[in-house]
Length: 210
Image 1 (spheres, rainbow, N blue to C red):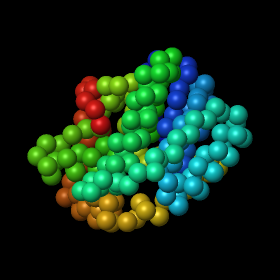
Image 2 (image 1 turned 120 degrees about the horizontal axis):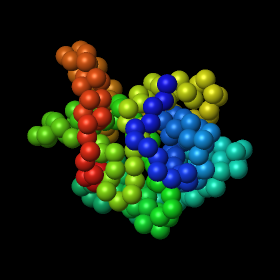
Image 3 (image 1 turned 180 degrees about the vertical axis):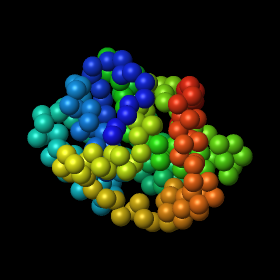
Image 4 (image 1 turned 45 degrees about the horizontal axis):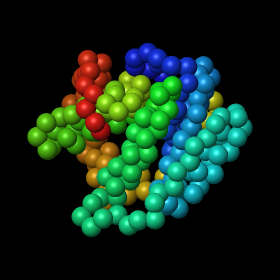
């Protein structure tokens, strides 16, 4: 059901968990065979408060060490998208941990559907890009061969709690527009796009930042 790409080199893992189905399922999968620690980044939204409570309850249940960071009380700069602003601040924190906790592997839970959407998005700007396995600063993404549906199935079969962020339906965000409006048409034009991107993911060895 869930397939990891690459070999996890260390027993100790630090997993970035948002409270959504993707990361909660990935955390539940990893905690069963690895020594995991969780960090959660609260972006300061209404969803963020509920997500933090859910993640705290889960890690408390399984006695998992927990690191937390709240978004600095700064407004998104003019001309920047909130998506990009949040991602930049989140990765600053993740990369800091990668430098500090050298005995751990830092894991984010990007999956195959994320790779497909990113490839479609970047292709419209001139060149299709694959989310790399390693961001070059110590953060790895071993779930790139697993679909979102497989992660959701794991969560449902194992009664893993998760939240659905209502903002994921907001088409003002480019990622959501691509996911909800464009991808059904992309799959109609090329029903095999999942297999195509999966092959690219399997043979991609880049370490470019993302």
